[in-house]
Image (cartoon, rainbow, N blue to C red; front, side, top):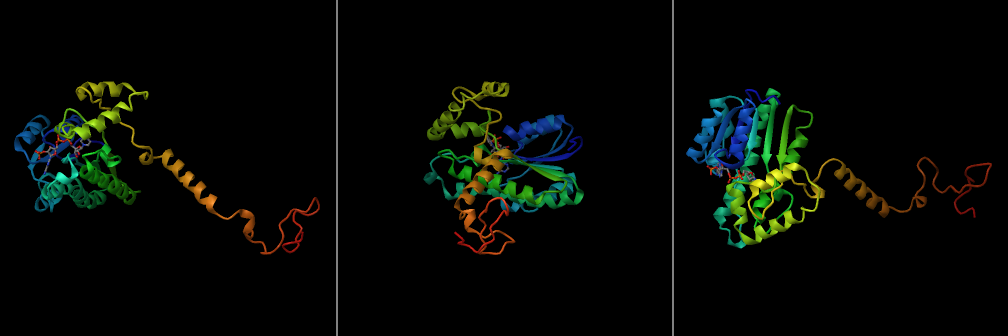
Length: 295
Ligand SMILES: NC(=O)c1ccc[n+]([C@@H]2O[C@H](COP(=O)([O-])OP(=O)(O)OC[C@H]3O[C@@H](n4cnc5c(N)ncnc54)[C@H](OP(=O)(O)O)[C@@H]3O)[C@@H](O)[C@H]2O)c1
């Protein structure tokens, strides 16, 4: 999509990845609407990108209800929605309060679904649009202390795959981002403040250090801080990779299914009378034609 003058709505744009995305979209000439709770952060990003500010708590269902309609009434049709706002609740699962549980599931999962649901009909009608879903590495692999966060991100990843199927053939696209740790962000600091999670991330990234990688990783490591190498683009676990991996998986399954089938000789051939011998009988005729059990 040509981003020049495209209207891009970014949730969670007051800091971190959302603010960096706002800079990148603005550099390509997009017109921005920036949403989050904290006004000072939003205003700072708006001042350098020229974006419009919408102060909103997107974990509040009353705010999410009709959100896209209000944005479009004030700032025009949405061309790109970046569902970026998210929180982590890293820590022991049983120590989560019910309120924290509700808040993270609502913001990371339900709001993402609801905003996608609200924005898509208009995009399809206008024949133009794109959604970017900010999932996570935790959407396809879980780390200790991140059970609920990972659950919400798995929801986003799975839902996005389903929406993509429904958009097939339409001029509207959807992109899933399953990023590893990104630094510097408040979220990275929060995730690594819980020792079991930090230890697991250290093992995860250390295990990947023997593999050949490009320069991007080295560049990203410079931002990561001591002890935590942060690849810009990590490789997802095999089961979640697309393209040829999925085809290989399917052919593996086919092999297993056909191994369970009865042997071919036991089944009557299609179009041939059951009970006729199919034994080859020398040179004159390819089949002897005698009833089964001729020998
Ligand atoms: N950082 C990472 O390592 C990493 C890795 C993979 C995926 N991600 C995902 O990337 C996205 C952005 O992460 P980040 O690292 O940039 O996080 P961050 O630095 O903590 O920023 C989160 C953003 O979401 C906004 N937000 C939080 N609660 C909100 C609410 N109730 N309503 C509206 N906005 C809210 C925050 O603004 P206010 O507080 O002002 O509302 C902020 O702008 C998240 O979905 C995260 O899960 C991050």
